[in-house]
Length: 617
Image 1 (cartoon, rainbow, N blue to C red):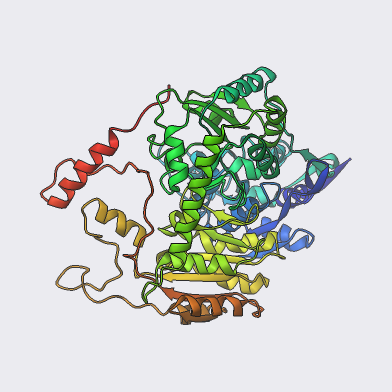
Image 2 (image 1 turned 135 degrees about the vertical axis):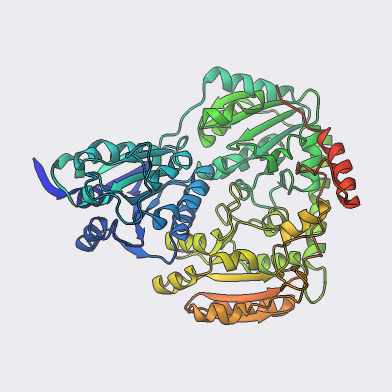
């Protein structure tokens, strides 16, 4: 049995029949397709989407933003759902490269379907074609190769019979997922072929819980029983595996403290007795002190980025050993660890049995309680600082945290807020803290907030975004209004790039190039450039207001619950009132030679920190 369809029609028919199943729960994998049409996809994929209304189509305002929306959708769904994104060849396609990189670095499934140049070549060069004197088999879509987990160019309509299942294999793989790119030449999109009917049957892709090697688990259990000062580092894999309950039980039964990466924040409730909070450069004192002293580090679903390892200075015990539980072999072997290549939930459940009856010492538990108490008092202090106006960023975070409900989601990505939120945000449920910090992409916040709301419409979504990031990509406010996907957006106005401004000062560069100022006497040193973010948001269709104190911000946030559409509150903050760093360091190399005294001093301090870096071999 065959069915004659264009390649584009067949692709959409295939996508709408793909399902996933984990733990006996089955559902459709794709929630639809975002897109902006141009000459490279309007007559192919555009026609197919127009013809088949059963596969939802969503119109965005920016191609990069729609990939961020797809990433937000996938992340809050624990990678069990995804969106497709289609563009024309040319600038529309290459606009997606940043989004593809962010998705792949964060191990999030997104399917990219950019149009491509004519496969038959006879009319080349076509509009927006990149020509090469070395080969005709190249287009701008080749830019996606290094940032995609799977890449293909469909040169003949029958090639999707094998390409689409391969794309699904990667998208649904817990270990290999990321951006998948299928370049689709515009002429091939419109060509018909007699496709086998079996291609369009409902197909279920099982998301398997890989069990770890029995001997590796037994050895890990032995290491745990021998440890005097163990520490668990919970990464994003805990959330994606839906292993939060297993981790909470494991930590409670063993007494082992748990520190969280940015992606892993929310693995435990903030008030769990073993929860030490954030780990690394943006970590809490307790997590970083116990990390420095740990004789055993159990990494669960983490890739040990430099923010987690504090540029390889976090774990200083000369006898420290690592056990890494990860579905990705690549990550499991990091830090010369004992690798347990396994699903986080499956491994934790088995380890719980193997170490049953063992518990850390009473003295160690006492230290954990003391660090928890110290940190809770510090968070209360920062939340209630009483600074300004302009108020501090910590007070803004505290006010939003206190208003947000247990299941509400907060989303952020770039600037100084991710570091402050990693430390200060009191997480109350899994997936309620949504941070893109693998790529720290400015412009991710509002677009991803839209994806979160589309995936979980019954949850309130709070988007925390700095003025710099807002100005890069605010236009998806209009898309949220279009889709009736209400967002609560908090714009923190600190007149520029506060995070890099602070880093610039620490490097001895006086915040150069990080303030929004007019040019004066040849330098960007004049008056502040004022942007009316309230009117800007209103022009995009949102409700909008301004707040100057924590009380006004709280009133604005509470009133948002009565709004039917996306609402924005703008609050000015003092960029000089920073949340401290606690027991940590980050390697940012300083100029070895400079005439500036502040740079020379920064270089001296850098040498001291650099000397603490160590290899784990």
